Figure 1 (cartoon, rainbow, N blue to C red):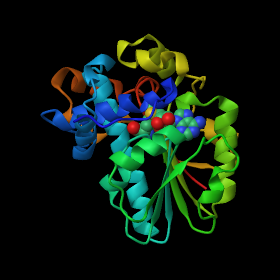
Figure 2: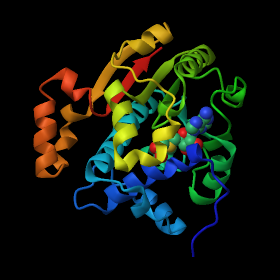
Figure 3: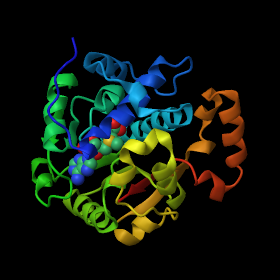
Length: 273
Ligand SMILES: C[S@@+](CC[C@H](N)C(=O)[O-])C[C@H]1O[C@@H](n2cnc3c(N)ncnc32)[C@H](O)[C@@H]1O
């Protein structure tokens, strides 16, 4: 029987787009992420993913960017078993289950209160995972997170919903709160913002986007001088493109040759502080 969810706002509802992409990736013949729990949650909710018009390209990009963020978080926590992991705008993502950090790590999934409530009943979190019900633009939410341990912070699909000044303030709060760490998020080049607003698969979030787009991976270093770029991850250049169906694979391999072209797709930015 389908589980009952709290009433979601359109911004909260956006979690279904990424969750369903990962569930559909799991059901696909050649998964890039292989998140069985995402599929189980969608089935438990009996969610009508067809209503979202998710195409193959969107599904693959969402699954692959999640994988890249998983890699950043798991490598950091392997090097810092005393560390803290934070997933901003976590939705119903099962990242903590996918990366399975050491039991000495504390992991924090942060999202708006209705989502946090839904998460509690749907995502079987380990004992070292904690849900923070908060608006990340609220100045106080970080008081729930330890300030004396190195931290890795990821945000998957969040930034588009924040205005530029909110992103800068959030980055500043994070780098001031923790003694050191890494931050990674999928960024939105200007073309990606345009594409979100004009593609059927992202119609559900088109009117909710506040972020103006940024084409320069060094922009976040200007918004928060504590940040240093570690790597700009351009999805077309990642090895998992080999798993894409032939036409998309050919397109991405071609676009990988030009940085400007590759940046028109999904970009994951990784910084240290
Ligand atoms: C596209 S969904 C992505 C969810 C999740 N990261 C994933 O990959 O499935 C965006 C998420 O950001 C959350 N969100 C948006 N604005 C937020 C804010 N100001 N504070 C906390 N969460 C926010 C939404 O509730 C939603 O869960």
